[in-house]
Image 1 (cartoon, helix red, strand yellow):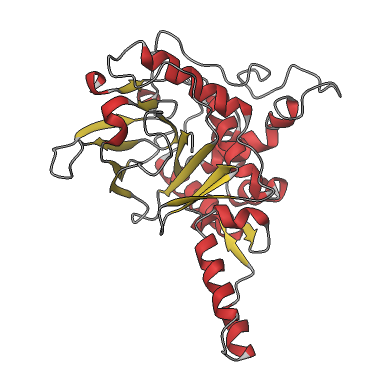
Image 2 (cartoon, one colour):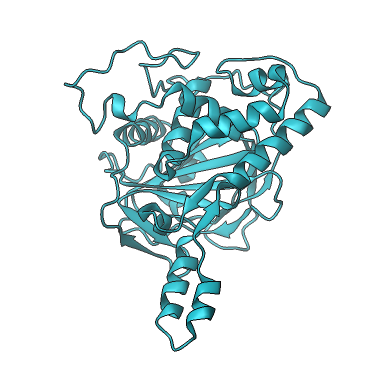
Length: 339
């Protein structure tokens, strides 16, 4: 649908380490104890299986039985990794509305005991459906954006990535809406857990942003999925597109207002080399040049680094190892836009 402004950049982010680093940036606001999580996964499975799923760049084969046991162990670890209901980031997740509802109820005339029963102190990573990155929170129920106090700005690496994808897409379509560089300031990161079939996204439009001539740039991470791109009406027959980790979909022009959704998530065949994408776009993207293909940083952090876009944003090897294991059980869509 390039004539309508929709452009698929296949394998736009070809390096595994860059894909993992983006996933790490999405999870970083939760401030999990990743050392404990990795230890939990390692002790729950054989060392060989752990190396296959957590070592950056590893292409080791594991059997179906090992894969099943590994997935079960990762799911158990996810259920034990808690996000505190008292953290500021909670408002930017799918748990936010639940906490807001509790706050409203706590002001009612209900008894103190009933309030205590309703109070929830934490939520597990296994139930995280989305997190909003940047200074905005998207309220799914009311379909509006709210400014979040003390929230971190969208990382400059993600902004630059989206701007580069938009620039390339403009050259491939006659419907690119604008040639100006968008000031991307928000990303909705949707998580689809493979063990929960209900984690899917029905047909919808992204049409509450202030300037609908600006594009949506969506990055695929983790498990592959079937993306449906429809038209301006729900009755339009959609086009099915297979999206794998590293693919990028840019929607601008007419397609910016099209219905779209993600009804099907496929299993993550991380041990099957046939699932690896080999076709590169003419200009692929290296997001973290400081990291080699094994996740090792070859730049020494200096106090002169810009903390808004320097080594402070480069994920550690520990973060990368956890995200590699995490993404064997999850699909993540990072949908970047300007509010």
